[in-house]
Length: 156
Image (spheres, rainbow, N blue to C red):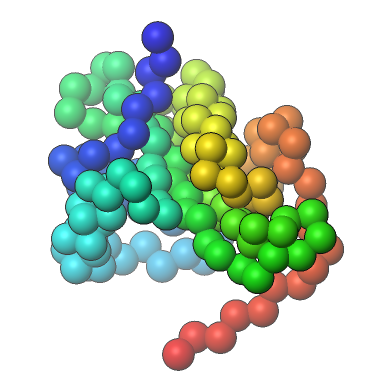
């Protein structure tokens, strides 16, 4: 039996805690947590929508009941189709985090494999993510390849 399960609305606070673990590990990340309170209602709603374009998969912490050991979250976006992706469904992984006390147990890999199956079942055959140097070997072992296209961002 797999330890991975789909996150539920009751997991929202722990999902945000693990997302913050990921954010805090990034170079020059904004470590503020004031946004958690405002984010919780939306996250709870999205976690409760099992048919939507968002999913989070988690593993419960084996030594700390009521807390999560690992989190992977992703969404499916529609883009106009093209050769190699005529349906236009593109998966994007945007949160992968493991509690520091639960690392090196294969939890992130197990959650990622479950998320990839979720993407596949919904027709998203192109999956994108941004990787830290520390996580890059995991993603490479799952078949992810670097993409040469530059990413630009505008904040409104």
